[in-house]
Length: 135
Length: 283
Image (cartoon, rainbow over all chains, first blue to last red; front, side):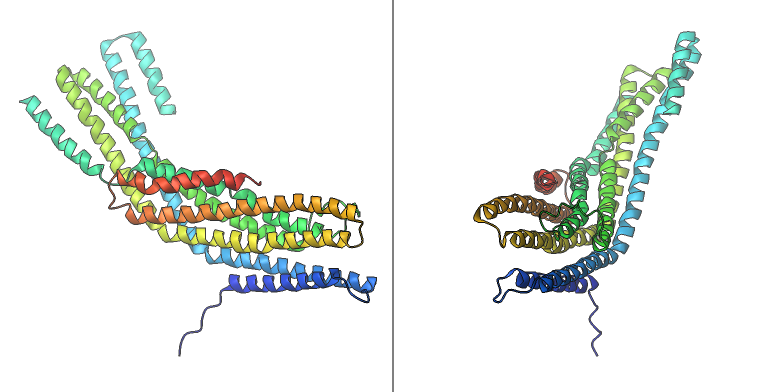
């Protein structure tokens, strides 16, 4: 026996929305057509109310259709989110490599200045290292 | 003797460089991802208009001349608005992904190499190596760091593209369904029909002069609706382009040579950049 065909909830809800919208529009078309004898005012008002109620149903099923479509992609969104977090971490890793090189360069400048015994150069190199570490 | 060793090292380095450069071009990937992220951000006003269109439709149930303020809230429109916010959130997740890949692809690996060259030059100066040796040392260091970071960047990009190739297509397809079927096919269509009914109802017993005035106003309203529909349709085309471009990139990321990637992604980037202003036009 063949397995049952899975129900496409978004499509089903969408079709119901279309059905209620068509019924609402059919009522409005009827109400706005010329009739002989003319439709009494109270009945016209009732037809308008009914058309609006049917349109409200159409809105409800449209919302259901969108919800079902979104529900169907939840696993996809979860995976995309996870890979996005990984990509951000990878950018972080690349930044770390750059940072390590910058710190090493500044530290080496400070060491060279200390070895040379120049107070002005030592102060400038120390400031540069502090800035690199802070950045 | 030292110079010969340096030359051999540089030759090996050049061979390694060529092999590393034969994969994807991060710059082309970055441009594509940047355009994709902008496209997805420009979708927000379309999703916002789903609730607003519903409210305009509810508003049009009031006859002309009742002078009631616009409807601010309606249960059905609120339900549509909540789901539209969900669609906008899905687009944001997609946009965040493209932004992260853009950051990864546009990371300046060359700068890391220059920093390393400075470090090695200073080391060379500190140990008193000859000028020629210092230059060679610096060049090798620059390459090694640059190759290491760009190799890492390359590898991670390929992985990050392949891991979600099916997911991106599924989410783009869902967003297309929501815009095409629910927004254009249902919400905007219903607003258009009920707007027409409002004018018809008022025009029923009106004089020819009033009918002409109403006809003019209806045309103006209809043009605004038509503009929204055209913008939404441009968004659908942009999402199709984005999905197809990404599928092509993910499928070919491993085997395409650097010069082929811009050729592959270029038409998609051009099309997305043309479509973005069209999406924004009505909103």
